[in-house]
Length: 189
Image (cartoon, rainbow, N blue to C red; front, side, top):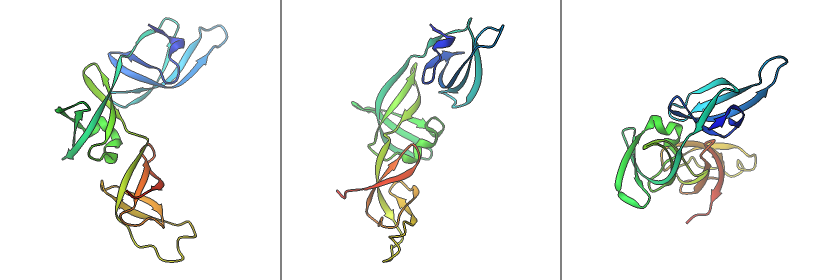
């Protein structure tokens, strides 16, 4: 069991039958009052963020979150199809609301980490950096690359991002999946 002082930043615990992640932790001790802990929590199933205070009498159990590698196969009408890493016959689908905004970064045969609570997948974790091929890019004109300008290009997964002027069609670029921003140009394969 976790006491109220154990609910520090990054701890995942179970409250009301659902897993919560502690985003912020603040211990308060005021004169002639019992100490309390003020927290900001994220429900890992619904994604809602709530503020909650805990007192010394509060105790919670740690959430049993299992991490499992899975492989993304394809997307069809808002349904994302995956398979277990070592068992390609065991296919299953996840809806876009479980993936949040991460679905737009997926491309076929990408390995991701699934977070399971009980038998249910509640979230996925993408690699921080992923490579994509540029499918459409406006031309760069001589002389306009030195000023550090940017342009919008379209990637193989349909995503449109801002990149430096020197990026051309068929280049491979690396993206940060947490921010959705261009990181660097990768070497052509």
